[in-house]
Length: 266
Image 1 (cartoon, rainbow, N blue to C red):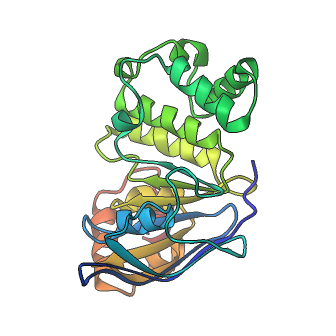
Image 2: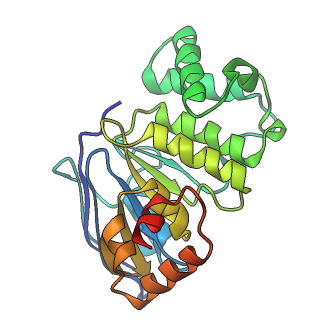
């Protein structure tokens, strides 16, 4: 898996019924880079990602430009058809059928997606589950989603997303509502699956501490506008926007041992 396609969103604007929801949003995910899209609830993070993934329907008027690997893409595209992209969303329960064993969900999906045999699909899925931190992938595949914790389900969803070999993985609040251990496991799984020579990552979160531990770059949204963007180290060390400064102060007050970027900037 390699990340070769740069993703560039330019001057993204979204309106509905004449009301502006996003204005002039610019962001770039370079190949193999991890970018945090940071903001409070209602700031426009998920709306930005829905536009990026081609999921906004007719009520939304979408303006601006989306280029992937130098190719201009339309804002509206059939769900699951956005070339080179895969996504993991906040609610892992909605992504998995609770009454169907995981092997009966994952293996056929990967076989169809890659046009390979069931045997080859089982090998690939097993390797991916191992990569996202499952000690016994075969046992995991025999389980039902309801038998797994929230963090385990999220890592299963991540393995399924990575089966598409995406150039860009979009992770929409994947650690929200997880306990500290599960959150750490999901973040480490994202770290293993993305980065230099691998998929790029757009990581949506309201938690600067988690973002600083995982991502090299950051874009900060407030009320549908980008208020700050740059390298994570630079933004944390010297935030320019008052909203960003408040996030940095709050994160430093509750520092965790793994927050390298925040620690370096203290």
